[in-house]
Length: 130
Image (tube, rainbow, N blue to C red):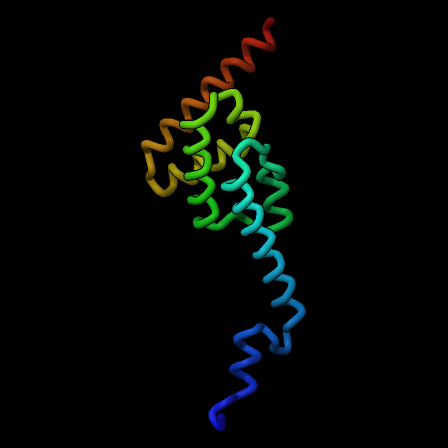
């Protein structure tokens, strides 16, 4: 027990002199992870935040966040009709996830996401005309 150092304990649990900031960022990280977990668990629920709101609350989504969201989105596309997927995710999220997959060169996913966007835009355009 002689080797115990309070500084190690404080660093481990984020209790250093900036503990308020660490606690706030830890809370934000937990809420962000809960948001992403809810996307996986509640497949039929709409995504509660658009990309801008997500960024205001949690900052830019990390690459890991976008990878998980890509997998949730592709699973939704395979399970549900395109109209439902667009209603659930919104065009903004689908476009952002598409751009991320272009960046990481996941072109198979890109083609599927682009197809969903193209079909949805055509339907929106036709609905505006009629």
